Image (cartoon, rainbow, N blue to C red; front, side, top):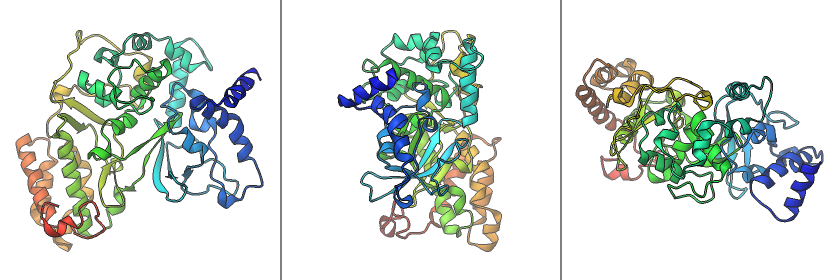
Length: 432
């Protein structure tokens, strides 16, 4: 009751931000959600504090988009029942809609950092590391760790501060890469500085927790689509739930005419090439590749929807060398994500690795030998696809196969207003 009284006084004084969001989610929103006078057609699914993961903050992503949930400007794609209950909390992804003006709605993805099951296991392991058998204050345990104490004493994010964390982009982090993480971190009020002087203690814990569990939201912030990167727009987070722009799954194209599949295959090769060679001189490479990583949007563009397994090598500064490569930097933060194992050293990454994975696991589902017989796909495309997928081939031979594939596929791509990302330019130039 004392806590509720304090929060009510804060609200009455006009406070805004995360504390008001939490107060509203905890006390005001349940009253609204239980009001039987609301019409089902006008009422969106309510989001509870536990469902969002706000009860776990500051071992969470952030609170930058909580107001959108409170204003019902983020809704689930469809009603789950006549009572409009929340969907199952056991899911990792949800389809939803997002609006800024309550009139035009855009598809979005609502995602947890990892599955609820893995979140639960990680929370239990945190408590266990502190000698607590059942439950504990997860935030208090993480704040007391040696790693987080180091984070509170530095205004720069240094390579030594992320050693032992398992996300692929941190396998060989340069100072330039870490500066970009801090400078583009969307969950703080003042964005744009490589210094963390303006970060509160809770901001630092949220960033560390996100880095430890899933790099996806950070990649979307560091390399935004508005700057030409092939990633969806990141809208923000609330608790342990993140929101980014939605897309149509790549597998929806498998039954499409060859021209549409050829366009998607061409885009896959093109964006993979652009990730490795760009003006920032960061080599973004695939550590795995699957159809679920990619999706298409309304104007026909193909995007990387799942960036959680992308590695990054700084081509300008090179690899960061550990002072003691044999040292074990693992701690409780090292096993909060879906994997506790470190990825392979950056030195072992071939320059053609992304193309090999793409040609082996994704492109064969868009282009097949049947297209040679039943459509107008040249036979050499299937032959070069096999070369591209063969890891025994030299990097130079694989790059040559990729170029041949691109040239072949470009001639098959359709030119219509269904492909707004390059129409009408494609009518007047072969470059589009």
